Length: 167
Image (cartoon, rainbow, N blue to C red; front, side, top):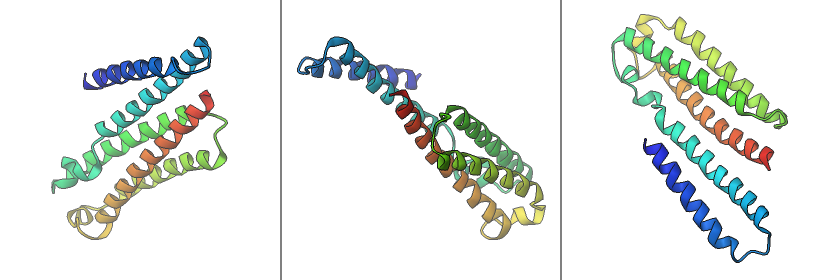
């Protein structure tokens, strides 16, 4: 609900500001409306991306990460990885086909990093999971946080390419 209110407020503010600025501009009305729509869309997409980032709990803040109960840890890690897999799939869907090769490679590397972590979690023994400040569990936790950060960065890049493709 907060997201809808924020989006509505931002849209209204952007349209009002655009109408004010449009009076002092030399362009014709259809051009002004088109530009205002593009600017408003960019703000809304940016707000939506930010809202998506806020809703995903960082791995380091989850109950599974903080707890010592191994079944809860494994279940939470699986859920976190599943959520990241969905975000990566969405990034693939949102990335324009004409985006640069380096960016498509970045998305591919997210898939590979996710696969590696999924396999790594399956290999962690009960004893390795007990030690949280060093060793395999520590490494796994750091890699999950790295993947989260990489997904966020790629989401920002995908938004940029999508906005560029729309112009």
